[in-house]
Amino acid sequence: MLGLGYYAAKKRPPSHRTIRDAELTERIVRTHRDNYWVYGVRKVHATPQREGVPVARCTVERLMRSAGQRGISRRPGPLNPLLTRMHRFADPVGVSFGVQQWSVCGHG
Image 1 (spheres, one colour):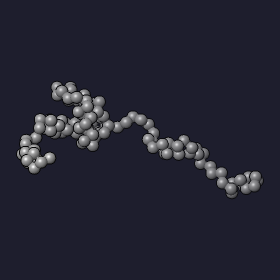
Image 2 (cartoon, helix red, strand yellow; image 1 turned 60 degrees about the vertical axis):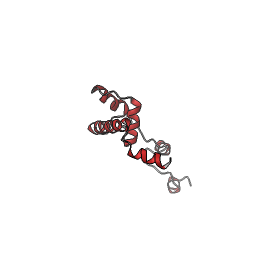
Image 3 (cartoon, one colour; image 1 turned 120 degrees about the vertical axis):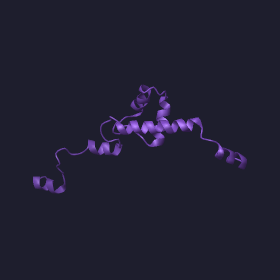
Image 4 (cartoon, one colour; image 1 turned 180 degrees about the vertical axis):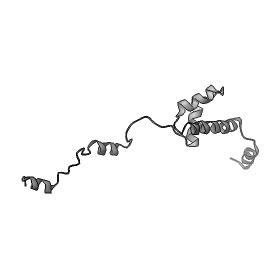
């Protein structure tokens, strides 16, 4: 960007999208906070719609992502595959079949 274009852009007032995004971000963060940080995009998007503020779901997704807001997933269990494998092969009884136990039983 040339020097003239840079300074012209700096002097220009904020765009309508920037202003509307700031207003919607406040509304989204407030809705997310009021619902204990549980609501995802689908429910956060429904709130302005009920209040008569038309907003696209993709806009809510973008603003939630930029504000660092996430909904809570209903998916059970750990999401890490390594933890899932470790949990699957965990010994439910808690018995460790080591060398000492085999010799105590008379097998060694």
